[in-house]
Length: 264
Image 1 (cartoon, rainbow, N blue to C red):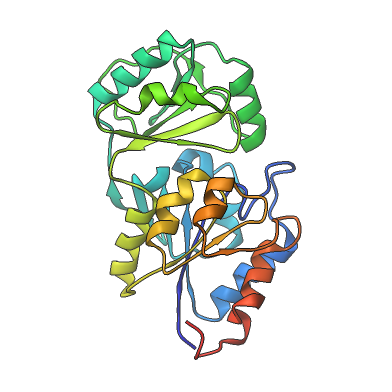
Image 2 (cartoon, helix red, strand yellow; image 1 turned 120 degrees about the horizontal axis):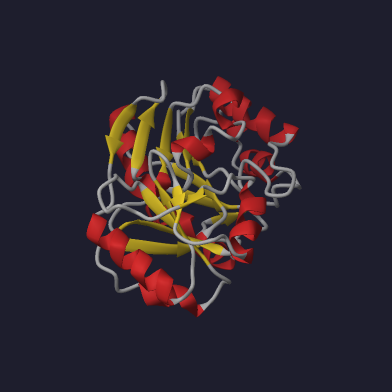
């Protein structure tokens, strides 16, 4: 059997966004893949604090973690391999632009904050991720910011942030957009781990626009059947929905459960 590096998005890929659970089909599939000797990596937009609120750390002995869309890389023991912080000027410019649009911004820091009183888009996204809304307070321009989240209805409002130097914006499937450091992504994190593990490539599972770069550099990209249209367009293969055993069915389609040495 040829061991593979398999990189999994969390929300909408491993974990559903309705009851916020990992299905038995998905759980059994990833455990089977691990038992077959594949390297298993989490690759998500969530930060470490947010990921701790899910089941992810408990369900499997993961080989590595790519968090905050590539800005925090952890090893299997959850120790930091690589960490990046946002330029404070880029953060301040993002907040100023958001204020002009009456748009709240969450800053992912050691102690998270939200810049404005939560609006309906914040509550919609909070329900989507089953996350806690942080305290409303001002950013002091000094504390390290790992990543940011913008909240608005899907549409052109995010265009106002495209020209801010040093950041990259990825609209999500709910009423939010991830803001990360320009040039960093799940792909850069996956490739760093691939190099550490001695792989030439990786296989990606995802469903959203923050998976596009991960799909671009993967040797094989698999999008969930209920994924974002942009992610489906870029994926090499579209599996079934999460509710309809999408992870399991993709593994069956590619013969991964039988350890076929002729299947790359």
